[in-house]
Length: 74
Image 1 (cartoon, rainbow, N blue to C red):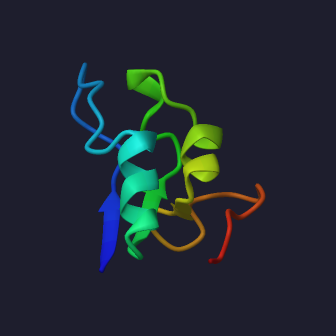
Image 2 (image 1 turned 180 degrees about the vertical axis):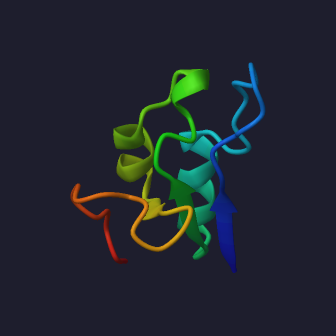
Image 3 (image 1 turned 90 degrees about the vertical axis):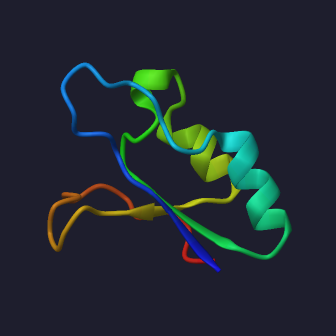
């Protein structure tokens, strides 16, 4: 299964749908997890934590992630 974690767009909303520990658990069970860049920042979870847990980077649309490095393509 592919699980997506979008960045919240509502004003003053800082929750995130899945924390890095949840990503690690899902990836360990064989699922793919795509996390939008910056999705966990408001909740204190940086992109590096999601990447370390096995998530892949997701962009909100074509060409919207910018020139930064892509995450793992596992």
